Length: 571
Image (cartoon, rainbow, N blue to C red):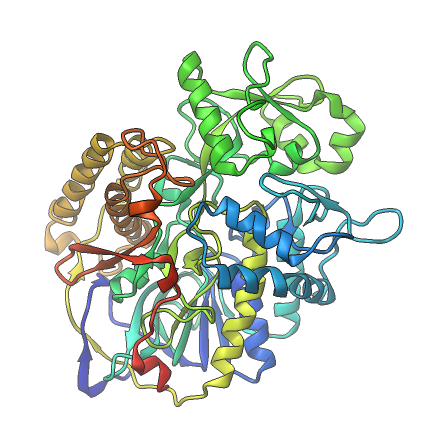
């Protein structure tokens, strides 16, 4: 890659070799889930030269693991306004109503476009889309496919369409850092590719627009429903680029994850909320339903309420897990409606047809992320974010079930429209300067996960968060110091970059969780057990500074979305 001699780009960046190859495009999209592939198809349809970069294979992200479905006001008697109301209630006072309104009003059309792309949803005897109900929803509005394999079907349809359109895709590629021009505008990304022939090793995709659709960061915890690739790479890149990150303390723990043992780590099998939507009950070891009387919707209360109730019951009884009882479904319903979950349970020696399923809460979805406006624009000119990597204001303090796939569809379209409406010349990247982050050893990943699970899991406190912060800081200070310079590899390796990204997002999450001294949504501070609207009905915004420190400030809910730099408006 040639670089301009007229300036340099400053900021934090990962230790990596200089790019050995480069390609040019109008837009580079990082991630291949529902958000990334929708944005790619819309950008291509607008005539933009588009490159999709994905960390593994095109269908290896979180989208294909989604079981429940896509929420949208598609059913008779349902309206976007009712969907909006349920979303605002779940968000516990921190949703941006204008963003939610965009989601619910544009959502039904987005689902229909997805069907036109080739996605096949389950239908009833009349041929209408079959709808189910999940936690926090007062109506049946969850469209599903393959019973409990919605994400797999959505991913299949989008991947096939992308391949049929012959989009330029680069698989097995880990994005490293953002490139800038002399004015500080986005100029592309650096990335490391494994086994792609001409695109092998560290290279660059040069483009004036970059869309981060990298998914979540669930791997920052020991047990999560997220796949192994969900290491917060997009949020970490944005932090190093100086972007604002919002609401990172709100990590949703899914209430019903299959319990495989106290020492089980990594991606855990999800037991979809749709199982409760169809009438399954939460019980303890004695068979008692403990959600009755806790909330008007009982087992179908918003996820934060259910996760807290399960955790409290476990604490009170000294139990490692609770149970989900759906024996009354019978074999036929299990086989037809939930074949994926049935197979997963049976593969671990549990038969839901004849016995209750052991479950516990595990890290699931990040409600916060890279702060954006209604068009997906971040506070870095030319940098966009979409899907779970973004904080659009839709989820607030707790995501409403099955709103995430819909968010990817709706805001990906908005991003593509914005990029297409603001044509600009391809900028020339400048030589990156600034602090190079010391890399962690690959095995630090497990240390980070244990630290975060103990200190910032479902239940948090000032003491647990302070201890976690101290351990993470020690990891940062010790990083890269134990390996002599002459023994450090020229290419550090994906595992080291991933561990470093996890540390970056973990530090930001801890900092925000320490600052928010209340319990709201999926942020539970046992030392501040009440919701405090007088002081904390506000967003927490984090930025990473060149000296590695983190700065935080709060913004009122009326100040979301952010005021963007004038540079962005002048592109």
